[in-house]
Image: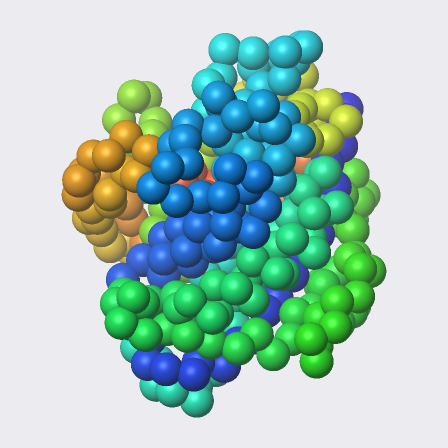
Length: 323
């Protein structure tokens, strides 16, 4: 079995101007942060004359922005070599949706994965710069400007401050999947998964609002294995182990669901597709009943941090587990 390292962070901000985060705050946070990170590190000085495709840049292989936003399998990848769009080594837990007045506070989280943990200072500076430019609909008119007051690194039963008073302290708390596995135990009975942000899951080639437990774990296993392979020490489970785990999940049944369908549109900057309608998302909770092995419980804990489903780096697919 391979392993994967993660560091979780929570940022506290204070808005200096009104902010509208009433729809898809994760999308607003991720796209705004990406623009600030690129402006911070790009040697081509982003602007009208800069190349839109980072792959033509001679520094693409060592650029922090390219590492986070243009992830692709390395040439010597042992598995998943055919994947063109591999998971990014970071995840945002977006602020609560809504409208914020000047002077109000908000919190959001982010997780860095594998080598991404070493680039944490770049994350903090880009977030600080995002506060100066604004995170909100209408940011060009001055909306959504904020001050980053503090950032903490979060572990199990511990929390360390890594940013306050303009000072950065590089002391991230590191977690690992093997640590989660050692702390997990079997469970028999009910488990309720509460999806706190929109989630999009495909099962049997169709998008579903009530995935089977096998379908949920299948998507989670694929994401976890890909992250561990490309940013950790190798896949968490080989093909034989994956099939065994999915076989266990067949006996778990859905015994309750309260789900709300959601529709969204998105502008794809790279493809320059205006307001493309996305496949349906859902929010709510699903209760599963059955026997859950120690490995499955550890995977659910990992998924709570890395999220599940499509567009997880936007903050989608964030959930909590109620036993």
